[in-house]
Image (cartoon, rainbow, N blue to C red):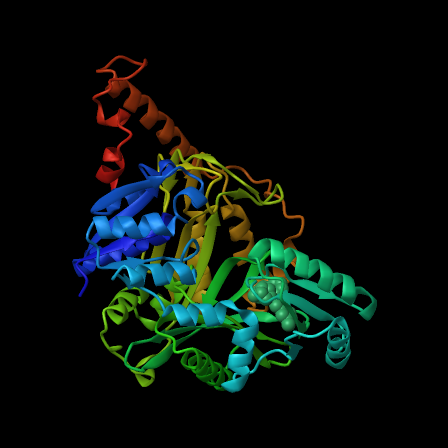
Length: 503
Ligand code: MV4
């Protein structure tokens, strides 16, 4: 087993990985930017190394520097989390070339799935259904002929894209040449690769993804699905499992397809196979995310597997401790993503200092947070500051618990989407489990903050925060009411001492 792991990430996922390492008795090294000197992940790790200024390109995306740090601190493995370098083939290769273990899939599997045209071809070959389309290497006339066969509308997608980047809908033949031209130019600019391909456009699909886990000994299992249709501009907002859409038969067929997809690229470690499900309940491979995902906790709660622990064990060469027949879904889990943004103002990212964060605590309520009281949310990083995850015996039970948990989640100082989430989980369509990928656009296009009185809890918390701040500044001055502050008081330290005391 590894004795020390470098966590090449920040925020809640870095904290998530560090906590499991602590539990397993594995030491951790955090890397951090100048903006994260007192962040939770920096404080919680056994060692922390400053890698650069706040912009990701100068810190969390500096693969070369991160590998150096891993070697200098004598780590044996690197966990990439999600985002940043997690799906960067060059980084995975550099980690391995340095004699370290990359806690993720083989670089070849990342590369194969990163190229959507290659992935589609491999999937079709492996018998995994793909959306009818055209992997165009050909001329404009070939594209036009293929689109006519597929029938309009069609989607032009970038081969190097994914997650909706560089995608455009074309309604009629007259618009196709220009759409291809623009898409090529954009793809060249964004990915350095101008290749585009066509897919038939599926109206109002649902996004259902399957968690897979594979070891180095040829064992591949799936850990069932996650329903991820509640999203806005390709950013997921609420995920749940089981999907209200699937029945046992469809679930089994999609699960088998997900396992076949993983096998087709020689997959090892945790991964996610994304499918679109159309109105006739046909399913199609969309793409594979070759990393741990944000929404992994709902699978953990319903299937009873710690996915980070599994990732570490698999990367260390251990066989999976279960087979497909051992895995079952029990109850229902829902995740809400808490974003520092203003849903009443075009979802503008919100920044500032979190004066007070009071997280709901109760049976089967989990909060994975990367930001806590006193931390500053900057514009440099993803606005997701926490994930609220609940488990219930059945869907209605989980929905009730989520409504309760949102009502008891207090964040002061930074605007969040919590009131927006409260309205979604109470929405009739959502409660019926009838969401498609256009749900938010369709029902929440001009959402406004409800005109309700501020709850007592919030007023009390605000008053306490105020008092707390005032007391802190009095203590810092040895009893004087206000002033510049005692440089030796722990309240005035910027080195994380206070954060470390709180957790
Ligand atoms: C599609 C589609 C309809 N038809 N492909 C968006 C993200 C990227 N991974 C693929 N996406 C889509 N591909 C075909 N052939 C509709 C979407 C889509 C979508 C997919 C999943 C979740 C949310 C979405 C929101 C808008 C469009």
